[in-house]
Length: 555
Image (tube, rainbow, N blue to C red):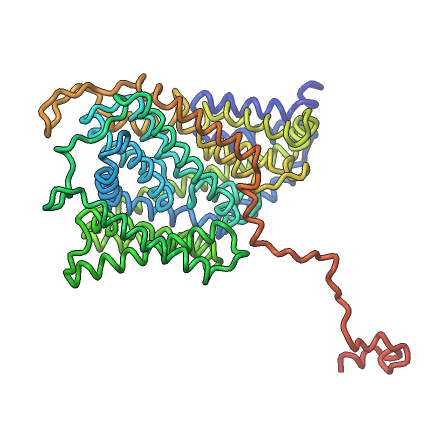
């Protein structure tokens, strides 16, 4: 009994993980564990029943939290876009653009994964879409099955680090920080991961050309009557657009503007100029642009415009993340209407899925609230603090231990479970140690991304397994027999990309500036230098009439 009184918090924590490993639902495991040990704590005299009077107010606070409204908005936006055919058009266009390059299809998958991440924020939609569309094409042209599987799964997980990521919303809420600041902080690490994937693809295709061959000449579309690929006019269009965007950036954007805002505004101007030129060329029938130039412009610019509508308005301070999500949902509907893909069945399916995911998040959050209320009542927060704050190495040692712990737990828990269970425990400790919580949150987000790629429980691997061919089949275009993709090949293909993600964790840990640049938008006024003296205060004159009668000051 004395052992239980002295160690109720660690016993409670271990019991929670046993329940999760047994397969019980996360939300109910959290709530049941909290209530069970609450009764034990009351019986042992460690807490009083009155503490649960705060529970209804906490639950009501969750339901009325405006920040969490961004989750259904972004989820709905992603589902509408995924079903509107945007991913298919992007993959086909970018695949044709880079088709002559070894590994070009893989580069197309990475770039489309990044664009889908910046417009959807939903891993399942990205992985399933690209698995259905690009995996058969990659297998048709002889891509290594492990590499093809890995690049599709890894590109889909970019939705968890590139804004408007759902996990960043949850982390900002759990850490008590601004979602906009979390988005700004995660912007450069997200782009860094995209660049790292592309570099890995180039290196692999250089040393092992058979793993990522180029598309054969016979499969390349958009050939000009002269027989050329038409990339020259595309290059000229891009150079003109980039030149105008750079001039605009120098003349119209402040030098003190944060780097993420400068990137978003520059990309917006570049896309707008290219789109206007291509539109004039088509309407006036000038014939200045090739087929591939027009195709790239009309397929890629609308998603970029939607990215600005969502992220740009947040970064430049015109909208909150919730408002940006609402505008993104409206923009997704408009894009679906313009493609003639919007229908009532599609709307109903998107709304049903959005409702299910939103309820899933809210129930986990309610369960984690019950758990944390009991855990703090039995001094569990102090136990965690004493366990971690005295780690050798100070802040660095703490962050390394937390990164290892998150990586190991990601083998068994997904990012929602990690965010709701360990972040409320680790966040206060990091805050007491003087660690910037936005940096801490982005570090955890990059680490949690590996939870989708871990064999054997990675959800991205499960999503890909569900759409990858389980049996040998005949390719309809070539008539050749294509071998199936095994589960072992999918798991093996994920390992290089997990290593890349861990390298990015180390980069964020070693160079916090790639995250903390968000502070450039904060006020630089030192509160201690503010003078609050009011000129002409009647109380400054001891001979004034109000000194004898203070009431005269208010007459």
